[in-house]
Amino acid sequence: MMHMTFYWGREVTILVNSWHTKTWLGYSLSLLACLLASIFYQYLEKHRMRLKHISSGSLKAKPSPSATIDEPLLQTMGGGGKVRWSAARVGGAVLFGINSGIGYLLMLVVMSFNGGVFLAVVLGLAIGYSLFRSEEENSMLLDNPCACA
Image (cartoon, rainbow, N blue to C red; front, side, top):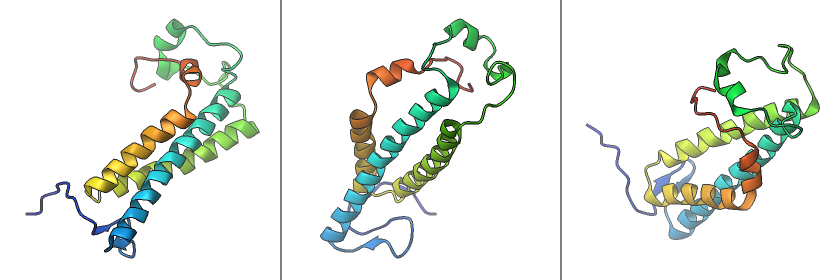
């Protein structure tokens, strides 16, 4: 029976068999790559959220929370049920796809179960969040208690 537990050491395989570290230099460079990829994830997320706000017109007026909390799954987009395609909306969709791919790759990187790799990814996400995400931007997001909305 195989147990999946975190381990510490310089020998780790990340994503593919050809990305296998054997030296401290290779391990350190791999940790740096994981850290930078995590920071880049937050950078793209910032731009994705900006495009989402632009395409939805939420920069103009913030709806009342009670209007969106009551029936979040029954709401239509744009008020009339028609999807409005714009460059910002298409760009946001593309960034969502790219960011989702990066996010899943980061998850798989963490699943190498190496403690250093885990810390590099989490630290990179935290650094990226502090560099690229602002409190003003977070306050523009609508807090909705419904997890499925």
